[in-house]
Image (cartoon, rainbow, N blue to C red; front, side, top):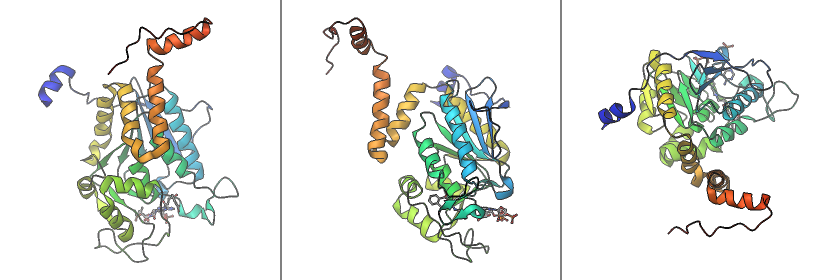
Length: 308
Ligand code: S0N
């Protein structure tokens, strides 16, 4: 079946992608992230650029991520978005503990924020696929970020885990000694989406024991879609994007919304309902209503079928 699909659609290109730096409409430079778009292809790449902190984020980092995601959403030439971390040691190590205060995280202002929650919602609602490209650690709030993304491609060196409840002396894989307590938890998407992804028992294990899992364990648990060699990580992720980009953007948009709808309650229904309206506006039936209003006459819906 794969062969006949390839015969009809052709191979997905394996050419390396060429990135060019991008700005959002404000034209302001980014400091904590890199934002790039692929030349001639509908792919955007957003990279957390704080490798000296294992790509931990502060409120300012999150503000920049939100700006970049907004731009990628609004740019109609973009059909897939990659979220990643600079370097090979970490995708993201969560909230920057040096910036943590009694009311959230504080950097550019005198009061704290937990604006990563806004980013999580933004990724969840974004009508284009967001793919986490993970090398190294995806832990704490960084682990939640990859879970919120629609797909995750992991390098063989990827390590996944929650650290919030972690005790002072613990371990990565119950063998090496490690680490310090951070004392935080994500009782929102970080819990509910995880439970959906890997099931409640495994999610409780992940949070209660705060173990770390390697890429193959994560794949087996359903946390990631594929594991690839570190040197192939970007090309493989780009290939997934290219494959997505060959498919119907509207079908993908509605499917993302539909796959999240039940879990997202009213917000999920609103999103899915919005897609129905968006598609309805493209029909002759909807157009008749608008035209009749503009022409100050009663609409004539008689010619439109009442389908079974
Ligand atoms: C990632 C780890 C395992 C990497 O270990 P490794 O390779 O041995 O490197 P280190 O020497 O430990 O680190 C290198 C440098 O990077 C700094 N650094 C690493 N992580 C952080 C971080 N999260 N914040 C600040 N700095 C960080 C190190 O300090 C070191 O710096 P130097 O060289 O100057 O010493 C390992 O680093 C590790 O375990 N890191 C901590 C990971 C962690 O516990 N993260 C969870 C933090 N909490 C959240 O993410 C919560 C997220 C959130 O915002 C939230 C969301 C919803 C509800 C609540 C919250 C909430 O915050 O409470």
